[in-house]
Image (cartoon, rainbow, N blue to C red; front, top):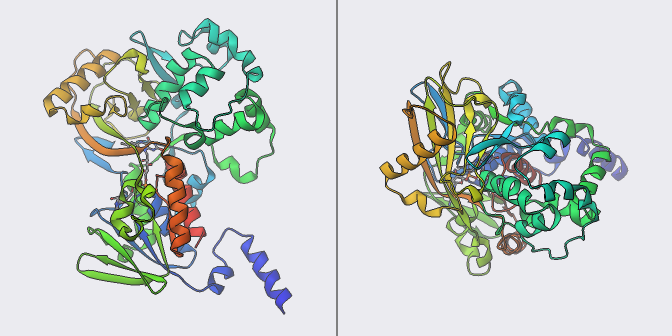
Length: 471
Ligand SMILES: Cc1cc2nc3c(=O)[nH]c(=O)nc-3n(C[C@H](O)[C@H](O)[C@H](O)COP(=O)(O)OP(=O)(O)OC[C@H]3O[C@@H](n4cnc5c(N)ncnc54)[C@H](O)[C@@H]3O)c2cc1C
């Protein structure tokens, strides 16, 4: 009899769909803190797996930093503008929601990425020929590239990204490829970023294979599961903007399962958890899943602060995002993903994304929508500039870089994020250890959010699903 039960369970659990297993383990009462993409993905899969869920979100809307606005003929984002289909979980989320047709992958022109050097936009090389002819890198570093596999392996797990790249690839590669990439994606600084935590795949290439090139070749040769083919690595959004994804998730989760607009406070009680939010008390819950950002742990879980102060250890980059729209575009052709500014160029913006090139219907026909990023660890004070000075500074930079003859945009919308992107620096292991400690000390609590496991949209979706599957 036991053999048959075991056989049935093992057969059913080998499938990804909600199974008999979940039924056997009985429905769990689960509270999820935060309704950004992590919390929403988590709630969606937790419900799909057969649990009873309630999502607590302090704002009055779902989506977290994902927020799309329509104005004056433009559709712009105030938070993340794009994601990368770097994991199959992204495609599977759209499939599982039944909205696969709304997943919008950018056209192949998005492969063109531009880096500013001496005031000119230079395409980031994508092959051997363009690698040799690009003005971005020094001859020393270009000719040094074939020797990368023979350079000594790094031994310091806490070496910063600048030092690692200088050692393996050379100074010009750091200045004109890695530095602008780190500013563009993390609003960060390669002197602060620790590859072991921020870029674990890259770190492991060197640790496991002794070289980036040798490691990349070995990875290419590895057989890939069929499922990985879904990870196209293309840039994605949702048709109509990322809020459309958030709204579909909220509908699938069930609007009645959200408690919006109040700070939830979790209280442990007899091995379970109650939650106070506004005038109401909810629960008891078997599980509480934390998905809000790292700086909010103690707001929601005040009882962990004394024992696990490291859970609040996080350095955030501030970012101001500016949506600039033109009904008639007169600047350089926007034939790419966008342009990034290396620190060496001393510009007052971090980068510009060509949103209307990447996705349909973001600007009126013949017009353009740009998403401009300002601040980051490079210029943390820009967020505090008076509005007119800020606008004047950004307009001047954008007009100069994209050669816009009349800088008279039809849309200029600024969103300031005091806590935009958590940095994966030397505080990361402290945070990770504290999260593990909390889960051990308080069974039933699961810790997530963009303070661990990466900041990109794909990583957030994957973490949300993983948390749901851990229930
Ligand atoms: C300006 C900007 C641009 C970005 N651009 C990109 C990009 O182009 N591509 C990309 O891949 N990634 C980008 N990112 C990163 C990516 O957007 C985030 O990592 C991701 O959206 C975070 O999702 P999340 O659900 O983990 O957190 P959030 O979206 O921050 O959601 C957390 C939620 O928790 C809520 N909350 C906080 N405290 C509490 C509390 N005490 N109680 C209840 N609720 C609480 C918040 O209100 C929020 O709704 C960008 C981020 C920013 C800020």
